[in-house]
Length: 150
Length: 167
Image (cartoon, rainbow over the protein chains, first blue to last red):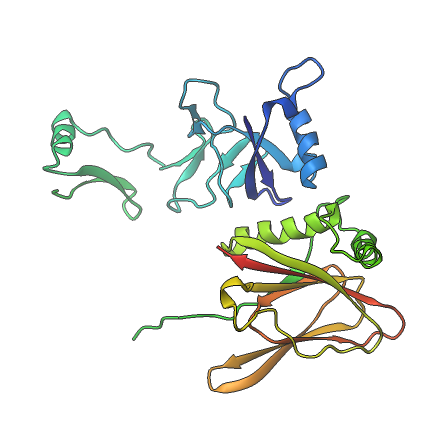
């Protein structure tokens, strides 16, 4: 089963549809995005170039089943298609200072990901005595450690 | 002091901006209408109808987060200077099965206006009139009464109606 995003001419994702694998095989019997696009153009009345294949199991540039990631993320309605970098982006920037990380297919802070929690903090989270976590502080441009006790 | 809006009467309108080469062919829509007259049965789904219907559902969902589901559809033909009676598409004794929204789409329309009646709390009987241009639509709550006013001089006006409920 393949997935294709239907996008507008402004590169907004309108919907995502599934397509039977047999409907996107080329003459040699290999899966082909172009064949799938042509099929969708004919049956769904929307131009072939505005159907973009995506992967249900790809998130933040990683295929969760160990396969080859495709186009950054599995998109939702309203997401943006970036034809230059070939990535589906969430439409909303989490914070004004965050930037796109093309490798990860996600928005990241200007100073990177939050630090890892210590083993002690992880253990306390595991037994629900604390709830340690990092929250982005847009004003100070820092990751702030928070602890809301369970 | 705070404010909460309990309900709204929202009207959606605009042009159907299909990608180049995929425009809705008005002749096919009018052809559906005449075929249904000839065969004395409701016309079936067609490619051009699907383009219109899908466009509306996709972009209303994208822009206004409304999931529309089709209820019914039909086409009307209007001679010059024909004005319809005020009408509504809800059945007052069967609101459960009535549509939420009525969509009107202009097929080669000329000088066609839609007059929509609404109440503004105790200010009853207000109306809003919008021109229904060719390849444009207006969608409004099905509970609103409306009238289609045709002031064209020579041609026939065709208006495609689609009703929806939202989930």
